[in-house]
Image (cartoon, helix red, strand yellow):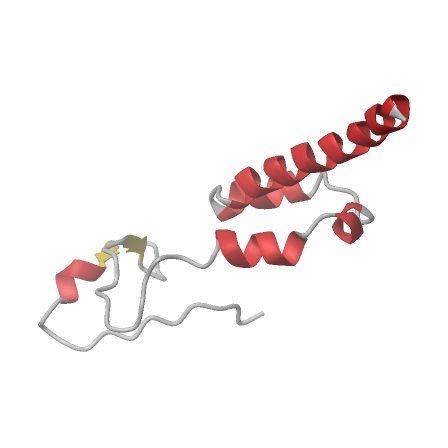
Length: 101
């Protein structure tokens, strides 16, 4: 009985370790996370709680009515930097996140 429990503990410990590594990877910047995921085999997504971890890791802390965090981006023509706080109280700003591809 003890031997069976020890044998069962190995795959459980491995699964917990893999879930922990995946959770840490999901909190990295998108480029880093994407590189990490390129090494994860497809079948691993069947045994790891990928969607639940991803939704938790990427949920963020902003709530409706919160002020958007300040950030700086390069303009589309790449000639200047644009900072969100530069527009504060001067004009409305709409932030659109997504892919147009």
